[in-house]
Length: 478
Image (cartoon, rainbow, N blue to C red; front, side, top):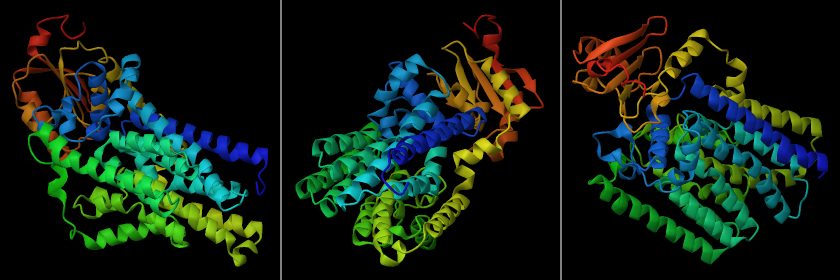
């Protein structure tokens, strides 16, 4: 693959991205099937998209009783409810969001070789295929990218728009840059901050000064309008996450987080001036993380490093280009270069292995209790639409395609319930009420308005129905 052969292009541009995409999609579906997703955030977004598709607007049933029951009071997500709605009409399934998320996530795999080719081409080089293959595999193993795959949030859906905008900048397709940045901004207010990074990229790397300034100005105005005016308008109060601003909180962890970001990219972003400028483009997003007191923002535990990963990929591309031009590097035998590349990828895998899709596929086996639990819950997939469903968070996504779907809390378990069914699976995730699981079950068993209609001790599954439903034999399944 050292030369620019047709076979090499086929492997790097199509076969490898396709294989990575198939593994990511299969792994994502298995995570849903195996109850490795929960209400936060999987069922929240599923419920949002389903409600939008069924003329309920930006309503999130799981936030019932909170200001953010209208999702616009929580996040300014204008684009994907609209795009996802047709799929939720045609395929109202707990797996639908996983498929849509995987399609957006895996689109990045096909864009990486194109981006590397553009960077190499502008340096007058055509031998980009080995670098593209390495960077493609490095991204697929990068911890921040892998957690974006595992924790399926809507900002991850903006990643292909971000990388496509950088490609369009290199190709001088400025109208496309504007379109991709607009789509990014409409995804969520945090994604709109990435538009500022694209503006910086236009200013410092592709030298599109007027466009760069315009994008930076648009991003700043859009973000502050969202968090200072639009979201507070819908919530009736300030931006929810303003209270998390604590720049001096956990300074040691934040410093370690930044060091790991560079280390997990093998310090390639430090190897050239353009690489450093590309890293600087991630600063607006990193700034949101570093001023927060929420550990997930400045760690690799959740999805929050999704958009930053694209800028670090770009920086690593420039760094690798500079490294490949070094005389000592060019003198190394191909076998040595291959060993160095493998060592780097093994290091990346070691730091991300619990979230790598391929590892999940290799380790996964169809446990009888998982199969049985899926079978048991499937019998309730066609509950009458007016029934209020309460479920513990680990099995909550199974019921998220409903208008009346709520979180099971201790307060709910003690409340008089009517036209309701309650589902508890103690072996699955009980977040955020894991410590109160026994209390919830005790309250449900002693609740006079409920009756236990199914108990599977081997699954620790309990299903309750309100007594008024039991008095009407046809009320549950209509």
